Image (cartoon, rainbow, N blue to C red; front, side, top):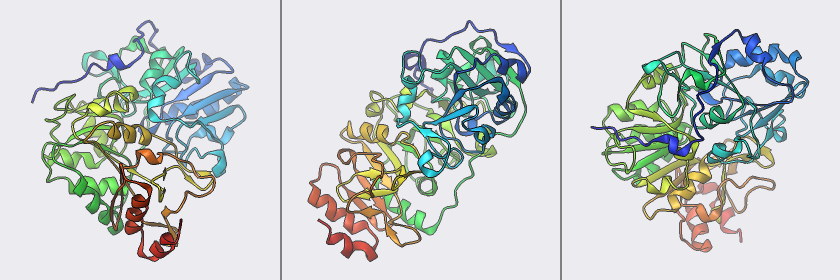
Length: 437
């Protein structure tokens, strides 16, 4: 099949090719960071762990640095020195960079993944002075590649005043928006070290039961978006009998390999980017990293494209698969907090829910176990807990899935929504929910 790929430059800030591309030791690169800077650190499996360790060791260079990160998947050396001199700001709080409300050092910024396309640009609300990223060695055409983390990083690379890149021979070369000329980077620091890996989650019987209901909502030729977790992994293994599925997603994980090798994913019926998988992040382990390395079937794209409000509605039979922590009887969805304790970020969930709602055949699935706290609490509740975060408003709620079935909410009145949600709650809580107003 001929690969028809979008020119992602149309969704990015102009490319800069006037930087020095100088190969230096870490100390020289870090000495160029002015005190008082706002510093962006690439996230996910693209986090430059070894270079961040050097930043922590050089902390005496600065009195104050504001460090902005997305989803951090491994311990960062700088968190030991939060406040002196590093002030930590998180777009996607996590276990390794928890929010202050969860006892951590990070000050969260409520933002969708799509917002990263404009948040950090000059003139934006959080303009970045310095970008610290990780790239592959030279690949095709002598270019470097941002590899595993492109969607939230590429705009920052193009617009930050100073760009420092760890060149790691273990980073795969991926095609698409993350391919860089050497002259797009100020300082290149060669450091070999293990990449951040995200272990493939174990799939429980409960996860399989949830996925078994969700899979019935996915038609042939669907263009899919997956989140992270055991349910998406289980679902991917159940979709191998589908025909001509396509992928337009914020991330891809280990299960994608099986979907491609089974023949279920061909990308043949996609409206855009026919023949290729489009994603912003690669989250997994070495097997996945080796699979995406110089793989012509994979194109890494910027956030403005993977999560774009004008892009998603154009996807053929778009189906989004996300998770949730709580769903209220009116359809309001919380995927970020346990009460007032923020445990995650907004991510791309509202982007994809809105994109699915903007097209007649779009589907937004929110899948979750019916209970939490080892069965002691219902995830379907009369109202979200006090202080809980609304991730997706009720007017964007579509299909809620638990191990007990599917509740179709889109376009339904509140009374019918409540009835359908009670029907997929755990039986132990249905009578309690029935007595709620």
